[in-house]
Image 1 (cartoon, rainbow, N blue to C red):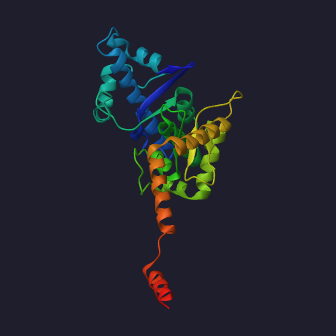
Image 2 (image 1 turned 135 degrees about the vertical axis):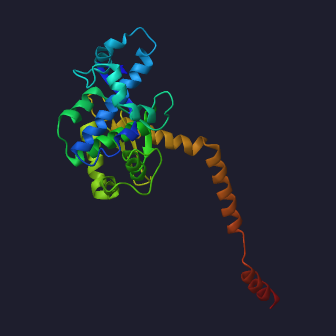
Image 3 (image 1 turned 90 degrees about the horizontal axis):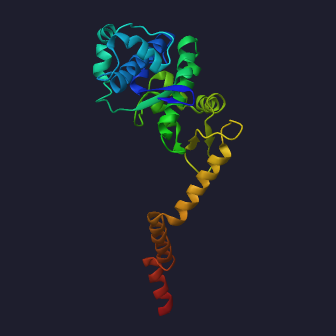
Length: 262
């Protein structure tokens, strides 16, 4: 997908399992992402179309914005990636997907990154997947770290390198990186569990926390007044409270009866 002069790669998040372990694991994961996207774009635009298979190399480089590609013919590519394609065939695979820009991809591909920087990218990709097509979304450290470990749903046990970000000190550093490096707007207050995230930016290109806070508070106020279930529950609470205030316990009734008898 191309947008605003950037090429975006969409791929199964599972291809990034192990990304956090080392530089070697990082390159292995990114290669698999690239190979998956090459096959995916061939399936959607090249296969069965007017693209000559001998021009596979040029087609893939052009579609993915590459300067070079590991395979010069489709036949070599197919032989080398048979297992990957069978496991994550884009015609059938429907698991968790992530999306990354071409420039961000090659920044990590071409340059050495620390463990914290690798975790930061995973947190960013996880945040994008949580927000999806919405303007903002609510999450918490347990769900976000589960997504960082390439899981669709919340998981209790995570790899050690990801598990540490459930500790407040490390998670606060991770949120700071999301804000500073990836321009993720983050908003929370003491009345809520978890926090809200958004990718919306203000006029200066900074995370638009003010907009996010307004959306969250407006959304919460709307739920307080218009949510039928919430209104019904509040009515039940009011009735119970009224009944309790008029209720006299049996022992108190007995004492009152004895008092009246005398």
